[in-house]
Image (cartoon, rainbow, N blue to C red):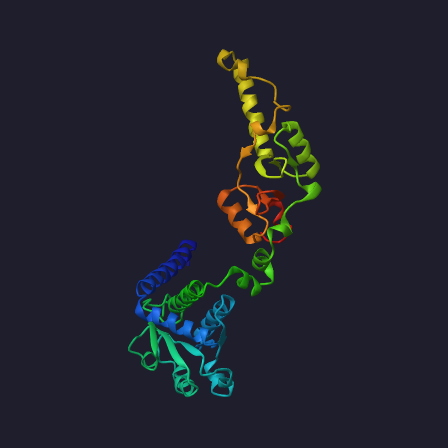
Length: 345
């Protein structure tokens, strides 16, 4: 194959799977809602979601169960072969089974259903065939009408497993909202890695304080602000009143823009533009910082999580964020350059 042929074939796979996801999305309806309600009843009664499949769908079951568990819906994976040799002891009548089989004719999964029912569980199935054996054995059937596989032989699970996995994600995300699962609990389930650190750490864990916080009053000069920034080794100075209430912020970016503007005015004056000559004054280092600060800047409360910082920095494209207590007093500052050091970015 040529390079172009390889890229073309890869794009074809993406196209097939995107189309499959769209078909599956558009099929959502009453059976999906019924499945959500059954799972909610199961969880509220102290039960768990048992997910099972065979072959590639066993891997999908593992991923689906992991997403459920990490987002507030307790779940386990049940290998249908091992289940028939003792692992059925892991389930109880309070639980619900989510069975995965695109054909709906996987013998290992279908043979599991009668045994599961003897344990008192209800069954939700996901298949590509509503007329399949597994669908007929289920209390609720969610169709995965994704169409053909991306495999040239039409056999290797590709499109079907992607769509089934997406359906599991949809269930998990709807359950988060339905159960009002809080971010604090999500953080408790993710104590390691950057995600966990961002969710567990508070703003107070990453903000600059003390000698590392450049803070001046509104009567301070531009030079005072620059000196405070230099001393704190930071890129900004917060401006606060006598009670510590946030008034504004002045950044090194503001200073660079001020220098650039003054230079432009000076250049225009040198070129003989009399209209600008009065503006071509020296850098106002002794002028009050209140003339040049950004008033009422964005800030974050000190009881916020580091994850909120990441959202603000990403959305607003800023580098420095004051931190205030609930009375509006400045207690710190977060510099985006500090986040990688804290391993939350």
